[in-house]
Length: 86
Image (cartoon, rainbow, N blue to C red):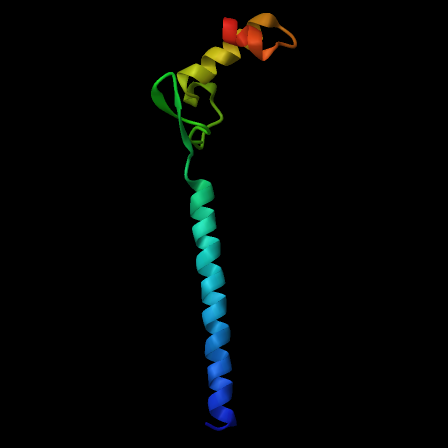
């Protein structure tokens, strides 16, 4: 194979590596965007809830709204233990 053939092979190898890096980056981005689930009190819950376009508190899951209400009722610093007890 001549110099021209070797150049084409090098270009193809570089292109293959670039595409592989892009595929890996896409895979990592998709995994990062997938919400993680866990079991809490025997039910599946999202560790990080889905986010919407609205900043409205009503868009939060009910458990999160309840936690906010507990913290607001205290009116200052609150310990996690006291939120759990409530």
